[in-house]
Length: 383
Length: 196
View 1 (cartoon, rainbow over the protein chains, first blue to last red):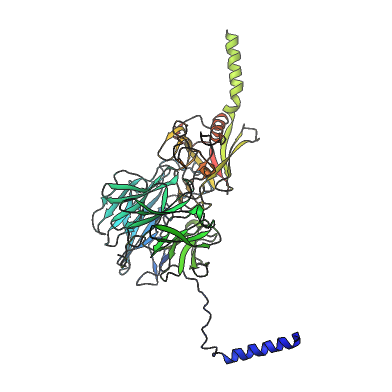
View 2: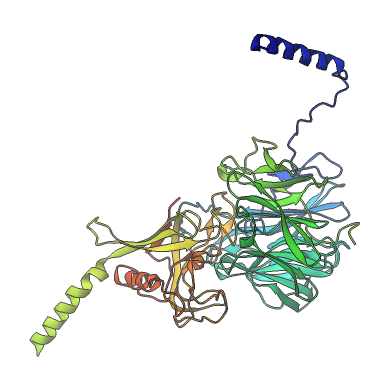
């Protein structure tokens, strides 16, 4: 049989096969994945996806300059009635290219004023909840914890110290849970225990567990909190490589005992290190890694690497499981501003999503795009 | 006797004159987290000729300068806020230079409490006790990693790294750096420039 015969015969077979098959209208269409941003997020002052409104204009842009993404910029309340967010009022310009001396900034000069604001979703009101404060964690019963600065202004050359305070409800008085003024960042509730960072010289981070006023323990030195287990009993923390081989560990929040550990030098080299501020759902946790994202399976006193997903460019921040569990979201810094990532776990691929692409931030910088989420556990239905 | 004193004064003045007249600044050339270059540059004004000494240095564990606690030092000029030879905080000790806070390239995130330092005790010694890694002992290459600061090596009983911290410290004092130790009351003329 020659090629002259084979080619027409092949075409005929293909034509007949197509004709004999199901009508094209009934064939399952190939699903073209459409990249999606996180369920609730902000772009500049716009809050998108909150209950009761597709797009809400907040009074200020949620940002966390003194905490990076150690803590969420926006935290929805457990009952869905409020969103709490971190705001930042710059009191004078600080050009990153120039030294303070060249800009005439002297030690003690006020540079900015952080605050936590509350947006009432139903009423549409937006008020300052705590002035000179940042990083808020919302417990499932409505109690809130946050860092309250010793003074309202962040000043040049003066470490922004203060206390972690807790209110049993929004209207309750604030009670200090820390006993020493220091640099703290609130991360989230693990049941009735509050997890927070103490930031020390050189930006060294210790994870603290606060069980009540004056009851403070160091849960993990020189470590970052990846996520809190769904039942609130364990914390997944990362460490290294500046203080030993990079590892991830699960720690019992109540006792500080290490339940499981994984030496990241023993797994896929693409992982390298794990980053803080990830997510934990069921027996899976996700963290940023050197090359993108790492998904870990946790259970029975062990941690294993489930999947490594490569993401081009700089690191991924705040990776989280989407509601369907098959997708992961996160965000990356891009030259044109932050972009959300939508990653398909099955294919191991990620797409960038840039909602409101023309949004602009202050002083020519791009508008921040940040997810809104509550890292505290347990949440509704997770007990 | 007067002649001897005069000659001694002239010799002292001549030998110390270059250091007195020099003006210097740090530069940091970011290459990798483990292997970048810290330099001290100086001139003898009004001569524009620059002299340089450089040392291997590390910074951060990530190249994202906006990643608090992990990213390397952000680019730009920094004022020096202090210099100690016996700094004694909980995480950083010994010979250190304290630099200003810096806004990273996203225009908002503040990197704070940043230093040039090594791994040594407040008395400039080594505390090498654990199996793998001590915070105040320079054991291995991975000690170039930091939470965000610039780090240079020094020798220890368990590893033979060069005395780069000692060299940087003496070069700073000998060629135009401030003679003061402690927190600077006013912005120091010696600054740090971190290349993009």
